[in-house]
Length: 256
Image 1 (spheres, rainbow, N blue to C red):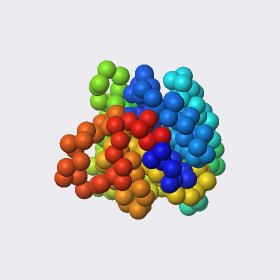
Image 2 (image 1 turned 90 degrees about the vertical axis):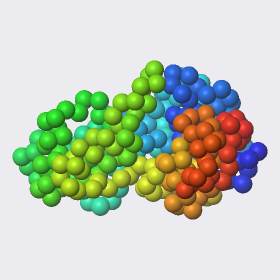
Image 3 (image 1 turned 45 degrees about the vertical axis):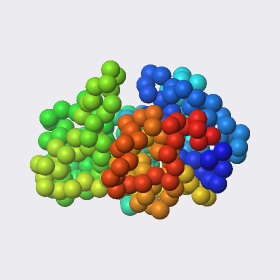
């Protein structure tokens, strides 16, 4: 199989394993073949809204076998990065996945803008409102670090709609304060490096459907990558792209 030379296979989710609410044909079986071949897997997502347990359950409902320990979210990577730096308090614009990851890493999630806060952390948040964005901006202006779980400007919702993503919410605070947020998710390195560590190291292959996040992230780290054409990228998009995948396949099933 094309995946033979690699030790760790890092799989993007949406566009690679499923197009919600359906699995991409052949993807559950491909995951099984990768496991049978002894490959170590990581399910990697920029979406910070769900916990690893929730992501694994979601994949299981589609017939895709995944253990929570194999799921690496931008929320987990954000929490570990901040904890390593000694961050103690964070004001969060984000959902359960991000809040839980920060709390599990020993970072206190605080509300309001009255007390001292080490970092303002922004992820995908369907309940974000003006007051929270205002408070986040005020805290950044007072000196709190600004960190974004991922830069995705939009979120692919059901029915083909695009909803504002974590990057769009982060842009509100960036525009207000003139400060640029530090990004953790793809194409930045922290999420991918955490995923490889969790998968046990070795030679990685990053499998994704987007040139600007998945393939760009792999290129930036000097890793091999496989572009699947079951998501947002078409073969004609490769022409003129600054990011070149190592392998191009029609679907994950062709890789394994």
